[in-house]
Image (cartoon, rainbow, N blue to C red):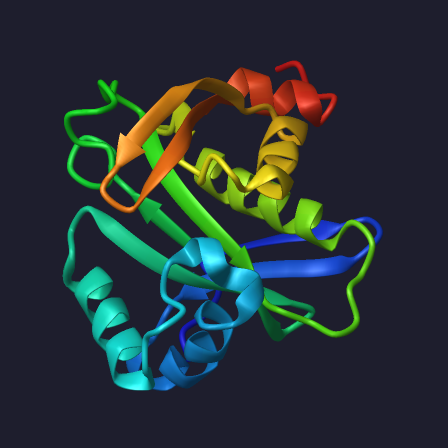
Length: 189
């Protein structure tokens, strides 16, 4: 297990930390998450364990894409991916500017949801991305039908720019600058 790359404490929910995904040891856990009915927008519903491990090995080898396992108080609780939109996902669709970073996140399925948990997850993800001074704007492309994530994105400062057609979905191309995010946190640095 690698050490956390980023840690933040949520005043209500405790410690959130993020470490790189280890495809060989994390594949079984991630398989259960990405094939769960709640993860329909992750587009891996039909994948077997080998396909999930292969996908995370591919991401680990990609210089423009990275996957991270998020922990809540030391227990695996979410998945995050960071990518370079100038080279992955949005090539030819979004005119990536210097400092643009693409992101995906998935909270683990649970039978005991905790109020405010997913908001704490996306806040952790955004704080990690903006901890890098080179990051100026986060770009996402959630499925146009994923209304729950649109609300979460808006809560942390994302604005929908337009609907775009991607190979696997129609998506709401959305962006959030550092200043937009900080404004949602009450921080106007």
